[in-house]
Image 1 (spheres, rainbow, N blue to C red):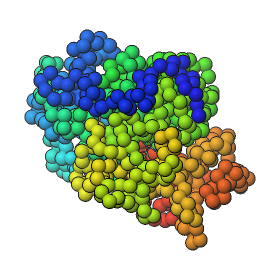
Image 2 (tube, protein in one colour):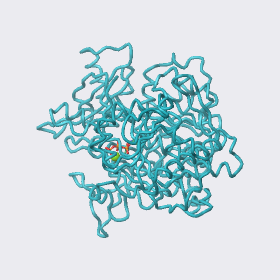
Image 3 (cartoon, rainbow, N blue to C red):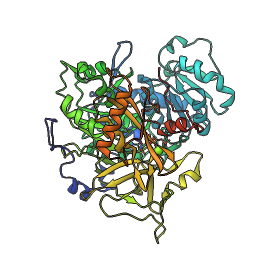
Image 4 (cartoon, helix red, strand yellow):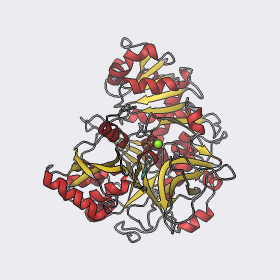
Length: 596
Ligand code: ATP
Ligand code: MG
């Protein structure tokens, strides 16, 4: 257990007393923390941008873009309000309106953020596509939503989209942004309906009145990471902003003078919900880094931008761990008061590393594309239990529910799931609906959507335990859990134990069939710099695993593998490790990261 406020330099937090915050919370009160549209309803872009201008904070910096070419850009809330209004005007001029799908495909450049928020102002629906996707995942995602507009760069259009046009009959307009787009103003079109945004900008005024927006109107479609199978497109509505805002305050502890850096790309739900919407609703300054991970540069960025709150992912933290102390030597990180993580289980070793190396506890948060906002968290100013996901956010009722040996959630007499109330019982994490950011459908997959619910409960598919004090502990995804000699073994526990060994940088653990015990544990291990695979290290790690975990749970076999397969959002793809190990079909690989 890590003491309250350790290393943060500041213990007071918005959360204060957890039990009291939960007791006093209601979603309707949380809705009142925001403004609502003067003309009626609720619109995400209004809550994130325009209302700050109305409240006199138009001069505050909303975004600081750290560009790859060194030409950094800062935009105030007033500038952001004007640009997003212009974008909404462009859509209106093109006849693109409420409910029409606009996709974004670009790196982290300023106009992508304008397109996202401007689309929401126009009451159209935005779906971000990760810029490193190949043509096929782009075609699938745009096709399933019948996208009418794509916002992208000339280079990405030429490379990935132009050749698909015959297969995208609904795509009418391609708006070009970023490098090389201004040069195309007035030039011959590079494809049907392809126009530089700057060309349409010329006739806009910067004044756009958002129409009354029903809070239940669709606003965003986010595709899941594809870690367990084919990605699903979760549809979110404007009211989700109530959950974004409440969790940004309670979990990220954001106040309007914070400088906030979320390292996730807006091609994924974290990068949109917590890289754009949630922090802007709190009136903070968001840092956006156009470049990819580099340990030294990241530490320098934290220092130079005076980042106060940092939201990142276990994979990035493990890479920083792997890089050792040298990259942050001499860096002044004193502005940093709160570090949080999401996306994968956060190994206790990483929490301890945070305390030792950067003098900050790293606070885990759990949520999913489907939940739309953080659901379980370790809160700023409260104790951290290394290895625990934390406790449910105020307004969220979480339960551990029973599954049968095949992994199906069991039904109780009322048709709903059966809660397991005894401490440390293993079951599936379920959340009682509704809450504002819960997905409203999976686009094009109503049957799959229906199976995500049982009675009043949303079923997460993740296996957890809850301790006697109400803290949740991640065990593994339902599909990744290993069944060995009557035990259920969570890969997270095994991976975390291996990470305690000084040679291990990262580990992915799977079950392989065994005629006697059902499945045995197998680990794939990436080594830290300075360590080489050898028989001696193999033996040592097997022994280390046994000493930490006992013979029944420890890996029976270990393979050294420097690049573990990961999704482009940074999650270890255990299903692919397993498929490759067993020679099974590899399944949907659209989100697989291809090592550069
Ligand atoms: P798919 O549903 O397509 O397989 P995915 O589940 O990885 O992809 P996301 O919605 O991006 O797609 O990820 C949510 C999942 O990530 C969670 O269900 C959980 O398994 C994992 N996850 C997120 N945060 C945490 C965390 N703090 N601890 C453990 N696991 C986490
Ligand atoms: Mg999932």
